[in-house]
Amino acid sequence: AGCWGTSWIRPHGVSAIAHPAAILWDCIGATPNELRRLTALREAYPETPLAALLHFPRWQEVEQLESLGIAWVLGKPFTAEDLLTRLAEFRPVCQAEVCRRAA
Image (cartoon, rainbow, N blue to C red; front, side, top):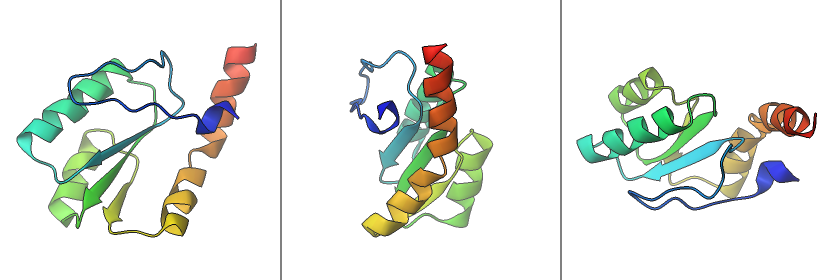
């Protein structure tokens, strides 16, 4: 259950979750400002799996994001089924995190 809780982090904001199981980063494109925010997220949560939602991503953007630690990129527009399928990839990581916290 803890795997699917959500918290919205606004630009320059701080998450209320100390150790998120996964982060879904939503942006228009891989602009310099967005990449700075992504780098800050990666530094704040170095062990947390990170994925991106991006408007019509170009292959260069996908490669750049992957080099910054993004696990996968889902292009907008997408279907709910596409998103849920990709989020399911985080499920084993999330469950391992929940078990680790319970120990």
